[in-house]
Length: 441
Image 1 (cartoon, helix red, strand yellow):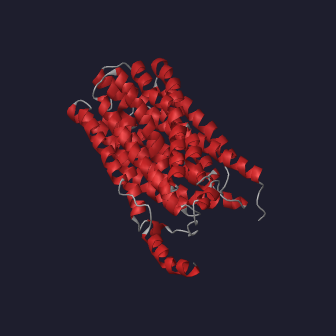
Image 2 (image 1 turned 30 degrees about the horizontal axis):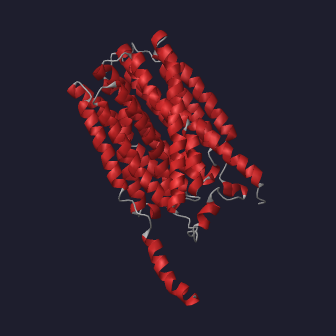
């Protein structure tokens, strides 16, 4: 095929980032809105923290399974089909749950079905699609910055949707809040689908930043990695374990933080929500800034893998300090904690995908990252959310949950220190090429 012009390629790349921003906004809109609505749902239904959190747990489990299949679809068709399917399922997840008859004896199981299943399918169509599509268009010292801009959708969702939800929850209740959210999801994701583009190879062009990678030295061979080959390396398993352990802590925080502020610190819903949205406000700046920092490290080291690894050590370390500060129950230090959580948030998800892609990026990366997401998101978020609620119901406060959270982040940082900078096959190839290079000299 004839390649598109450089100007059109630039436009397509930007549209990919914009559509990813909308998808990430909706994905994290689901996640952050749960923490805000959780107390209201408990009060209205009489269910326990564990019961209400089970809807979130089911959602994240279904999300992980769906993400695996979405990765293959993105490799073949691009993100447009996944965004369209996400629009339908995300709408149904909120809308059907908003019509729940809480007086019915089967209401809890209906809740698990409408919220857990449809929200899980909808959000599962968004994460791999957005990360992989951005990575296919931007690599090297361009990826961090552009993904940081796309990932700004996450804190924007936390900030804007919390501000939208709070007055609705106070005046109209959580069911009205879900109806409003269902419309936002449908509109944003339909727009994302219309803007989305396929991979640059489908238009006859290279990813932006590929030339910069070659400028640092010989480019790595363009091997098309199979899923089983990638999963035979510590590169992929190390990335999975680092991401998985951080997810245990992250989702405990996301799902229980507002409840912690209300039950353990004694804040009312308005104050707790205002503190919570500081993460969103700080994240608006943290996402692009941490992305730019990671790209600057790529330039400084001349090695994308080393830069991504460094950031993956830094991210969960910031999160561990942030959770430690929550024990103080001091407002200024809690605000600092929210900022540190935003910094962590800006680093970890995109950093893990970027590190893995620096080895296995290519036409099959959607499958590779989709299976990784299945393993990570099928366990970490569900366990983290459940453990937060279980600790609260069992011990009557969140102190054990916060200790668990700190340990999870520390383990993530320690695993990140073990991530390799070179594959064994690359070492063998480099050694075997040395005699030929010497003969040429």
